[in-house]
Image (cartoon, rainbow, N blue to C red; front, side):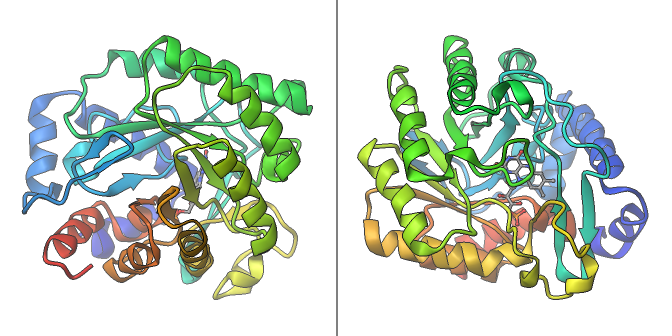
Length: 347
Ligand SMILES: Cc1cc2nc3c(=O)[nH]c(=O)nc-3n(C[C@H](O)[C@H](O)[C@H](O)COP(=O)(O)O)c2cc1C
């Protein structure tokens, strides 16, 4: 129904507008048990146990909504009903971010991608944490919080940027909100660029983060457009600081990865999600697993739009999988399909 009826209608409208409608609808559906049960009856997974416990958190299924969809944490009550085992909310910043000027999202349908230039639009850590404090927890549904540097001139310098990440983390911890935290160092469309994607500056950031007592796992969201040597330098720093793991990875900045190059503008205006991320992220997952063995948790992310894509990421060494664009192109039923295929050992 989604592919044949709903998607062709939704894809006629501006993507951010559709996203806002879907968020409002999802928030309403999550607000009472009747609508939650109705959604669950259609979309939830009810097969054999496929739960996974990773770094102390139990995910009822190993599929997680990736950061950027529920960036203001309004959907945590409904997402368990579509078979997800968790959601990473945010990215959240210390202060409110309006984001980049619109258009912030464009669909590239032939290339099965979205061009993202959101610029970390979100309501800021205080509002989002307060919202999460009010929610009812769903057992074995993990809520991670993606933390990024506020997208403004005030946080653009290194020291101010570090302060910004630390302020958000401390706020989450003070309110006991979040089952894990992700340091998003790789947003490709924020003011000041990806400052912390060099090993020297990442070290500075992790040195500051280390001083904050945190019993929950901390992951780093990795950029995928680095050469292996540079990527590995970042992994080495993450290993030295004993973080729990990495999410591999963020959006693709390379437009030559598009199946239909003409769908995107000639100049860079934002990162690509979906299929253009798929093989690059899978290959980095494989290399990370080969080089670091079981040292890290690896959360595989990028272009999971079918059971075969999920299978490739698990085979490469991912412990868990995150996705967004697959849900937009295939609909919420994709998660149920992934879960059943996993339970039947087809993945
Ligand atoms: C609309 C949109 C917004 C995003 N915003 C964020 C964000 O705020 N923080 C982040 O770490 N990643 C963000 N991402 C990147 C995704 O989390 C993910 O890494 C990327 O899209 C690849 O996964 P996918 O192919 O399953 O979408 C965003 C992606 C999309 C499509």
